[in-house]
Image (cartoon, rainbow, N blue to C red):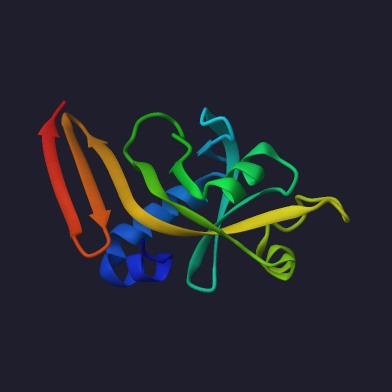
Length: 156
């Protein structure tokens, strides 16, 4: 596992483009594992603070409970307009719970009513994949800690 900062330090250009995809829209898709082992897919916010990336949720939501029981997740960027020119991002990783103070300071401003519990999870990365389409070319860039970036280009 690696922190967002480690990813930025190791692959700054890829990290910049991945972050831009997550900042382009407010909601993304998070897959977690429920107590019974079934998959759960939920919308989530993604943010960046203190050289780290986070995902957010109501503290009473299923995804928050899932991540507390099993921190593994897959995060998929919002597909946007569907052209894939800006890319499609998938991140595999684990979530670390944050303090209530972190949730207040770094969570989405103005999205939670006063008193509504918000849970913020810092994320650690095991794999980051950015796939883009340019005309008839599909380009997949995959980063793993300690392995750097591998690039695969192929025709559609």
